[in-house]
Image 1 (cartoon, one colour):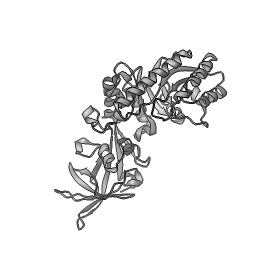
Image 2 (spheres, helix red, strand yellow):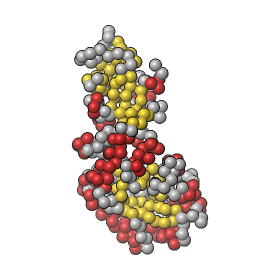
Image 3 (cartoon, rainbow, N blue to C red):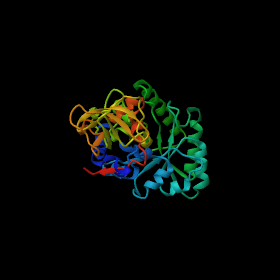
Length: 355
């Protein structure tokens, strides 16, 4: 059996589209919906997922960086895309020509636009740090940033379409304080002469638990991939189905040691686990995970039936197979569900199911 046949990811585009529609009705409400496709769409494959998001009703995409946005422009020429992880080495002119929206946190980014994009108007969303301290303009530097932005807008170099931020989502109280800081920052921007038409701060968690944070647009990420952003609520409880199911075939059966081997391990992106932690599913039965090795996993023997080489084991992501969820693997490895699915190596084949 060829190596590429021993493990693969089933990506349910049907579940993903349904999740996007659910996010629009349950989380966005009357606000616009931006779907995050960063990190190769959390390991699902950027282009296919981006197209599915738009077809399911997403108004815009969060692409994280300029190269990702430029690549997606080939298949989605008109969809608004926000890129905010910006390097001094990025091609700002190419981004502007491709009509990417740039998330701006620092004055040097505005200087780069002015220097590289003369004669072109670049759409920007200015980002204020409201307490997360991740890629946003600090409050004390905000007046200078909005003043410079207004100067460039008057010169026709930029269009300040939006102002935005990230929430820490550590507690509802902290998110409320961050929202207050955001509204204060908007007043400073308005006083500087800016008139943005889009304000956005809420992602999946806040859009659910703090409806007043939805504003003009919400950015929805991990939940539309069927993984919960909450510790105490699962995705299925919130009405979102898994999109990614990881499967591997049995490559060895050892009756003497009562063990089974499947041909996928942590070298392919599977989370390494302590010995005898977790389980997977085979024919609806739980098989204990005895060890996760670089290129294979060792499983315990089933209580009934006899496995055979070539049988398929579901490692996570398929409720119909009674498999664990990505969140289960996250709990076992003491991480978050985002990392479990995003860690899948490009060497793992993706099989897209329209269902």
